[in-house]
Length: 211
Image (cartoon, rainbow, N blue to C red; front, side, top):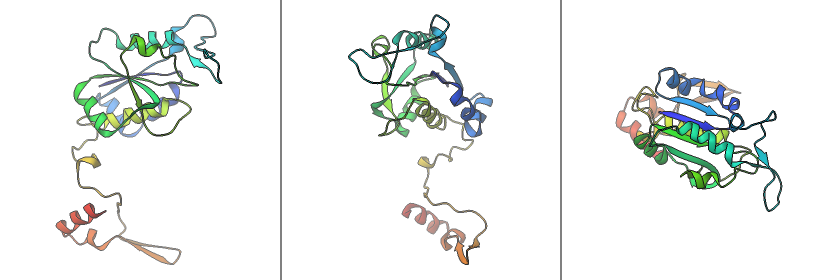
């Protein structure tokens, strides 16, 4: 699967995708992540992509044409591409969304906005799906884009290394423990729940479900 991310600040995401599971998935050629900066699709020395909004208001709006050209470059001649337009007012992104994307697409374009947003005419040129990663507003779309890359990637077979790894696919508790079985901190002892060291698998599974 290839993620095509449209962003004015691609360098802000590069360190994350190079590390841990996502970095390994890239090295193992399970996924690819490509960046497209709208500034590269403008003319002039300043590479300006923002202008004041029509109708007034604070802040600046990213122009449609540089973003449209970036999307066109990412899309190329591919016939089946999913385009997500990150927006606080978009549909809530979930694990189910991630699973559907993995089943239906090999190329995903994620448009990460900045400032007061992106000129709406981008959505007139391309068929996009407005998406939001949560009920809050961030300063840019780069963090949401990374969240989507992470959540979608872990649904791809082999990325986590074990089909049982995704917590949502198995009986799992939010509370986890490891060795040592007991330790002291400020004169108080902290122990692992007895059931987890009992060796009684049925009771352990029951405990997990209860948590």
